[in-house]
Amino acid sequence: MGEATYYGKLGFDSPEAAEKALPEVERLLVLIRKAEDDWQKIRDGDRPSWKLRDNELRARNQEVFDLLQIPQPDEDKADAPLNYLSGELDSPFDYDGWEIFRDFVNICFKGLVWHFADWDNMLEKIAQKVGAISHGWVSDEYEPESLYDRISLHLTEVERDRKKA
Image 1 (cartoon, rainbow, N blue to C red):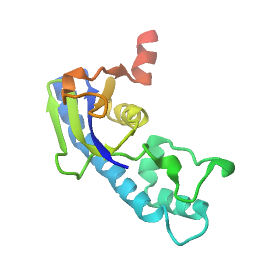
Image 2: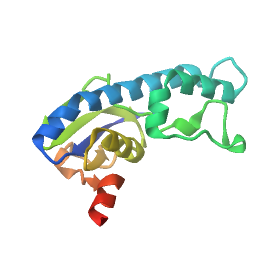
Image 3: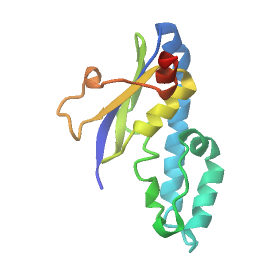
């Protein structure tokens, strides 16, 4: 399977809020990347039980699994290589071309990840944790240009609930 460049953006109420959140966003992306590396090492392990490997992976990366709230698969849907995690642990950190920066009230980042990753859950959970009010992403799999401005931001669940009140 190949890779594609993904672009993510988190929106904040102010430049100060974005600046304050920047180190935590980078830290979380690094943790997710480390969890992905652990997954790659353990997914086809010698241990016959997928559940043992899954439990070991979760124990090593508890903060990531707590953050992303990824449930274990049903027994009948699980597979030996733990493919249910495909697209869930795809952080761009530590690849060539990785970048993260603040652009006024936004934190923008990009990097290579597996094809067909879905950043909806990851960005929603990171946005909630760092106090962002919106988030969005695009991939060059679908877009010929790499423009952060083409990312449409979505309000977090917390912000949508706040606006309803």
